[in-house]
Length: 173
Image (cartoon, rainbow, N blue to C red; front, side, top):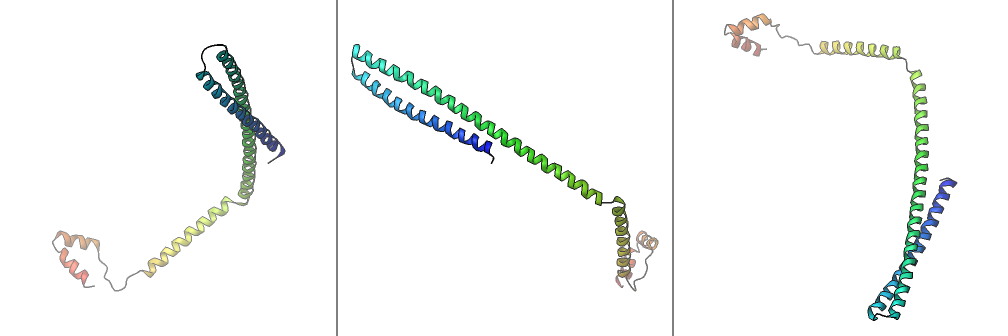
């Protein structure tokens, strides 16, 4: 965290502290208003009640002034927090862009080492090796001693009803 961020945060804390102090004053004035309200309930109309009423109105006016100050401080604090957030977001964006640039640079360097001709040669070699491996597998899987069956004979036997004879002769092997 740099000096600017710390300064922002310190100032936000100071403003929040002032707002809390004003909240305490407002609470004190609320208690005073309740006291005046209770007094006025017990009094009859007249100059004494009017005096208490005037005091209550002054306290109410003072309370509203403090509420306005508190609201202004809350808005200032919010604005500073938003500015700080925006600064941090921009720094994060710059870091991300720098990382992406480095990634592109490294990719370009890696692609210079990759030759498409070499890859195609390797693919051709692999294909040849796979064909040879298949030939070896076919050679190893040859069967010994089974008669060759002609497909035409097999089809002719099935059409003439002799299909079962062929199957029986196949079963002997």
